[in-house]
Amino acid sequence: MPGGLRRAGRGAVTFHVPPSGDGLTYEGHLLVTSARHVPDFAGLRPSEAATIGKEMARWSAALKSAGALRVYTATIGHACDHLHVHLLPRWPGTPDEVPWHSVDDWPGARRLPFDAAARVFELLSLG
Image 1 (cartoon, one colour):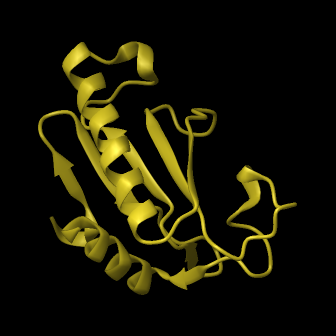
Image 2: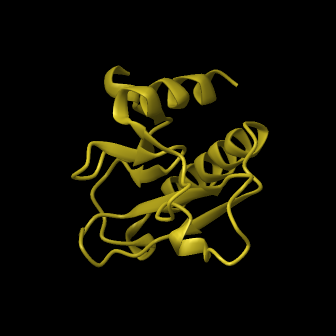
């Protein structure tokens, strides 16, 4: 799909997080969302939940095979009333004292222009 999006079956869309105000994005920060608008996991049909779970596992494995030490998952749902699960990789070189929720926000974090991050996403999708 254009723009680095990937649709999986009938229940999920996965994409790289868009850039922030500085035009950069954290390498490998992906969102897995439901294709149908639901506010949270409770709104999913069983088949949609299965698809989202499979996508989370697929993309987490792709990030780990690209070198991520861990892949954190979070579903916050505070600012956006649509289910989206963050996949946030912890790359080698991230200091131990950097907590999971800040791996994208320390001076040495792998932040890229969005076009470069989109290429990384495309490479991950080929794996």
